Length: 180
Ligand code: AR6
Picture 1 (cartoon, protein in one colour):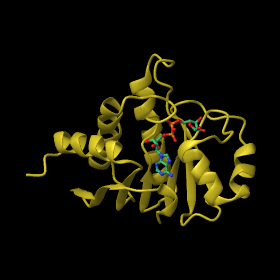
Picture 2: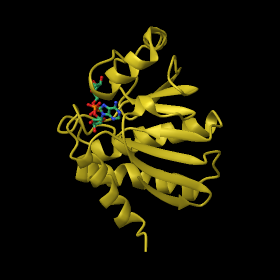
Picture 3: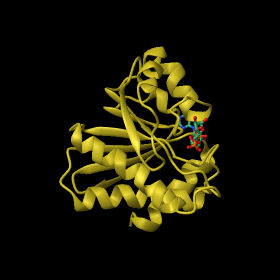
Picture 4: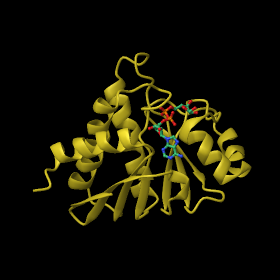
C-alpha cells in the first residue's frame, strides 16, 4: 500500500479487489451500453446484485469519457459511478477521454458531497490502454482535481488488481509526487 497526502486528502494505491472495498463511491469500468461485461464490471455486478443492472437499464447509454450514477446494491458503498473509458486504438483522442472519465467521477463526487471514492484502473484491461500511459493520466487527473478545487473528498483510493498494475501506478505516482 502506498499513501500520499494532497492538501487534506489521502491518495492511496492498494492492490486488491474493488468489491471488497468500503467507500462512499465505487467506480466501475463500464461500457457505453452499460450492458455489463467481464473484468471489474462483471465482478461489481455479481457482488452488487441484480438491482444495479436494473438501474443501469434505465439509462440509454453513457458516452465514452463520462459516467452515470446508480446505487450500490450489496456493495459496501452508497453509489456506483459507472465510468466509460476509451478503447485504445479505436478512439483517436484516447488520453483526453481517459482523463475525462476520471474527471467526471471526481466532479460527481463533489456533486454528491462524498468523502471517499475508490477507482479501478479504467481502460487498462479489455480496452487495451497501455498501463504506463494510463497510470500517469489517472493520477494526474486526480492530483489536479484535488489541488485546484475545493473538495468534499477526504480519501481517493486506486484499487489495483494485479502486481503489474500496482507497480505501474506506484512508478507513476513517484514521478508525479516524489516521496522524498
Ligand atoms: N477489482 C479491481 N480491479 C479489477 C477487478 C476487480 N475485481 N477485476 C479486474 N480488474 P477491465 P476496461 C482490473 O477489463 O479495460 C468490461 O467487459 C483489470 O485487471 O475490467 O475499462 C466492461 O463491460 C484491469 O487492470 O476494464 C467493458 O466492456 C482494470 O481492472 C470493458 O470490459 C480494468 O480492466 C471495459 O474495459
